[in-house]
Picture 1 (cartoon, rainbow, N blue to C red):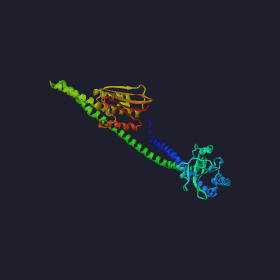
Picture 2: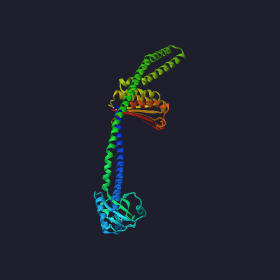
Picture 3: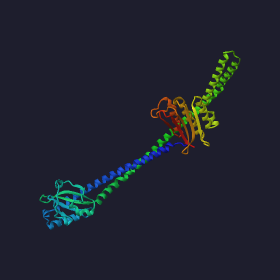
Picture 4: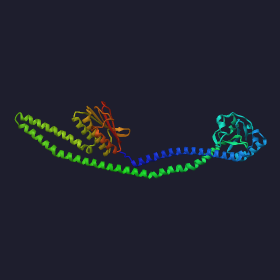
Length: 427
């Protein structure tokens, strides 16, 4: 019979759950870091646009730019080329007036074009705050930007020297946002993932220590259980020996004496003596049946089949129709035989006391490459979910014993449909 290793199982479960936790938290951290990186990149774009707009572009804008003066356009063009377009992160620059006309762009074809402005667009000509949004490339004023792919549009209000409001727009390439976001992500992701892995490694010795405590506790429990079983076996043998050598022999002598006395006794005392002798012999038979249940001598001497035969004989004496099937050539170790006998003994005891059955069948054979004991009866059955009374205490205790042996006791019963008790071990 194979034994479970709780230390290994606990460590495997810890490592598996720890790995899952690291992956999940890591994925969440990556997502949050990327979000933070993108947010920071957009903030950088706003700051950069504000600095260029207020520090370079606004001083270069004159009222002549609004009338399309070539000199005014050229002056702004030089500043835009030097300050906005020099690094390559900005794909387009536009300056709008409140009528919806583009008074300047680094794309000459856009200068003088007029487009409809919504109330939201008009509100952006006021204040000093910079705004950002993903560019809608389907709008007609953005037809020349479609070649650049996804863009981030950042705009901020500026003024001419006479105080006329304008809106300065820059269109950042997606590579700018991605690069800034990636830089921030690379700064925070490795420490975060490293901290998660370090935490898991620090907790690993604790998990091993706890698993070792579980192992020691289980070993101690098994040692106590083994000692209890061994002590029980010793006590069973002593009780069986004392009964056999004492009470049984005495009763046997009494039965012979009664039978002998009946031969010479006058009527009606002879018949009463014969009945007393018969009752004494019946009591001796019941005691011998009890001895088999207390300590099965045939289990170690003649094997499991002989012990089960004696066990079923006791059930037959109580009026049950019994049958036994043992697969030819099936070899089991002493521990497996003892376990099968105890399961069969407790199952039959429950059948006799509680099932109200007429027939019971015990079989020992192979099932899916393992040895299996099966005890079936046609009794009244019981509800597995609600069964909790003293009548099934023996089976619950036996389930614990089977579990300690590294196996599992299977119960299958329904009211009115009998019961099935089975246990499997490695053959």
